[in-house]
Length: 178
Image 1 (cartoon, rainbow, N blue to C red):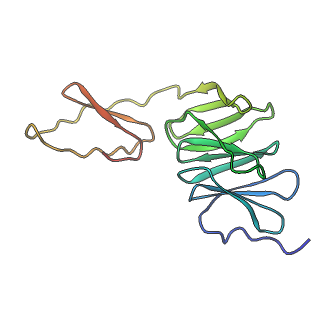
Image 2: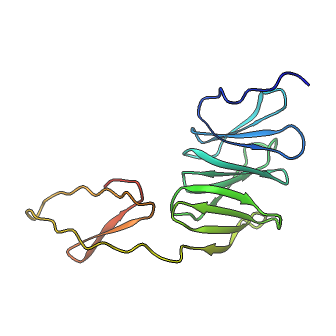
Image 3: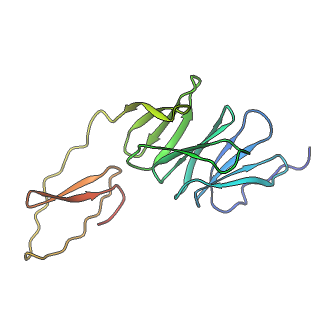
């Protein structure tokens, strides 16, 4: 065995997972890539699988599962090319992905939902959502003429619906401005 490999110096490193068999190290980066490293430290596979930060990773049964702020969970097999399956359902950033002993995959998003996936069938088995919706504040009065403009900032982690004059005018996702 040689000197220990240094992964910490890699710019944008956001998530790290170690395979249970072999010397495979998998890292997720702020640029949306998932990179697999062999024991010698050289990046063997660089896969651009997400449009935003990869914030969590798990390696299970030879498959890499990556959670991202782009609201998706990806799954791919290292060494089998760039083919990536995206599991899409979350309404906000996905913060955690967990591989269960039963072969299922669990993902938790900022919206408070937990999804239970069958990765082989690439489908949702269950959605466990937040038991209580946050209370709605009273409508904020707006003064001005018929063509006044407002800026809406949503500091919550779930979507906020905008209604003007009793009509839906859109939705502002958590952490965004309109």
